[in-house]
Length: 231
Image (tube, rainbow, N blue to C red; front, side, top):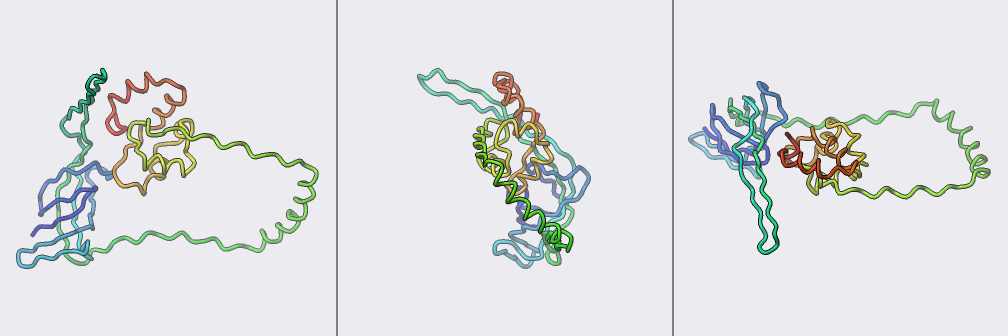
């Protein structure tokens, strides 16, 4: 029995006890992971094709270890421009072993819905005197113009940040290098959780700090040693 399943943005043909190398997963080593986007199933007698995925089917696997792939040299050159650039890249991978293929019965976890707090009687009672006092104070105090919005920095200069992630961060209020430097990696991961792919945010605040201070040479030297934002 084998299945074609999407894992970490890639499609694989897998069978039980098979080892597979996929893009880096956030799951810790030794823990199990379930992939429910099964596109095709073959049990030896019948072939089931999803539209696009097979409802109730899933592939269960166990994370063996996290590792990095072989180094790939990326060389760029422009004729008669005096431009040459050489970079090395090692893809972050996760080794998993397929434990079982479930044809039916697997259910997708439904996202939890946040409950809206019900208004209590106290806030309503307190709102009346405040509403009456505010107009009087506003008449005496001159209206001040709102400060101009801070111009967003080019966050794509941070190793590991692409156009989609930069757009998501700006929409969440993280628009400058200084803002990014103050944001913890865990918070950044929450903000970009909807962006497809595996993103390592550990070094982004430190990179942003160097960019905010104008230390571009030091940042460039460090980025040459990074791989997708990870040292």
